Length: 498
Image 1 (cartoon, rainbow, N blue to C red):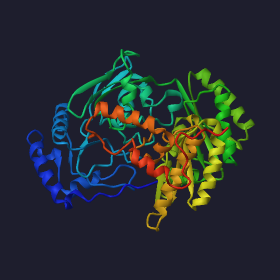
Image 2: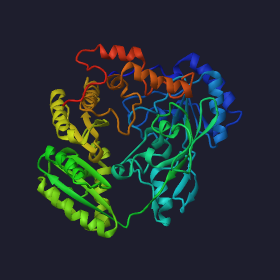
Image 3: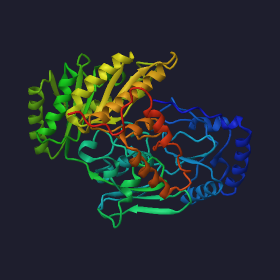
Image 4: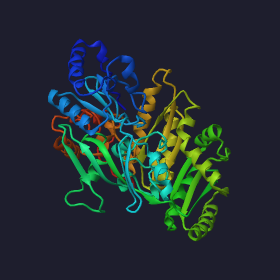
């Protein structure tokens, strides 16, 4: 991958210092003093998101409390041509919330209210700063929950989930954010409020709701979200299957789906990830296994009992060396705790790691895992694999040491090769982390120049001046031209292997 050049800090640039002072005067006409952060030590926590290899100080940070304040901030910035980057909890992993050195970082951290819960309609109306897990906690007394559950759900916010179209371990059966959001309110760069979607299953006109979800803050700022809630299943039970070969475990994923089962969750971890997670949370994982599958079935008591027996037999017939059924709710939670803690657990095994995100057809899992292992050897960097196996969303974790010369550059190049492998087998470069600044080169591989120009046209329709989250998501033609001229780079829109 090609890292963007680091821009000079805004605090060292006389032109930016003057621009900041002028902007601060205008902002403080309608924002309280604690809502405008201008000192270096105040804005430093906002210099990156979860992809900490990319860092940039913003010109300043604003923390509005109301929709009207968001409108006024955007109108002011629009009138002055100042870039704006909206930020939630900062748990994103593609650099999507990386600030602009000459722009405003707009934090939605103070939008934390659950505005309304309708148990009969099974909906909740929330502000964008509400944590993902907090929705389920709030509606549990009604026997309901919010299905998308990314690994960072304890911290990530619903506005960020909308921006990245987040999924989670239960997305196979219940879908991504786009399948669980009914409506959103957004503010455009010029301060206009738009309402997309509605309470009905369908709404008139173009499906702008689906267009906006996953748009990574390029089209507008989310200020309210109406989510769909689901009844808590009568029973949920998890199976853990151990394998002595990674490709055998990968094959079992396709076998489960081919047999007609749609688990609530179907996750896979390889040996390094298993060991790290077990050392970290003591989930009871078999550390001598080359891979494990976590398969959760939910529904009525009767259907879960029937499916458990059938899936257990299928897994054993497919080469599992051991299949365990969670004995109680506490053990089921431990199984998932280990999976959701895999990313921080890997952080204990290496000074640094680089988390990738690509999606492939399930049938290609064994092949892609073999090829990833070969690339790992080629680059001399260890790779731990943790992913949503049921829908083919891979999260290879590349272990490296940023203190060693060129290791970060090699990790980025290896990550790019893995993403290009995903495209080559008929997949895509992202499942839920977004493109951000990280995957811009691979956008040039997956899409043709004509397709990229259409993406840019959509961006222009919402944000003609290109002030919202500039430099993210859509590469420039020049950048693509330069990337494609690098040696050994595939042509755009590679054909899937037979």
